[in-house]
Amino acid sequence: MTTLIIDDNEITRELLRVTMRSDGYQVLGEATDGESGMEMVARLKPDVVFLDIVMPGMSGIDVLKSIKSKLPKTVVLMVTGNSDRATVQAAVQNGAGGFILKPFNTGTVLKTVENALQRARSA
Image: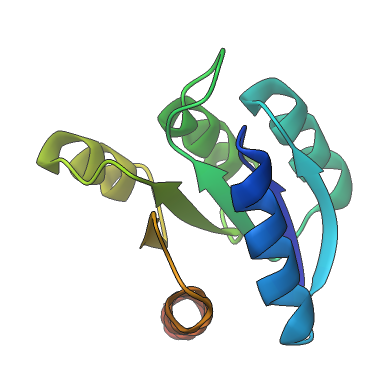
């Protein structure tokens, strides 16, 4: 199973990278903004994308729309410190497979990934 991380926060990217690698996932790459993240997703076609909602440039919601329009089977998990209703609703309406709220721990991340992959398989 392959993953890609799109987040402007270096510590968040590192925690996700270490968590996923320790559980046997292959981390194909990391991007610090939406534009480069979309390019990497199109080129590498990961199974799972971790996507920050608030980043410089494009918002995570706009990146989500782009990813899901081109690669609808890709599971996109939104990573955010902001769980307000409008943001969650916009992400769900645009195909988010789940949410990881900051601060997070390894168990939460792995359970969220597992649940999202199970839902995607049964869809």
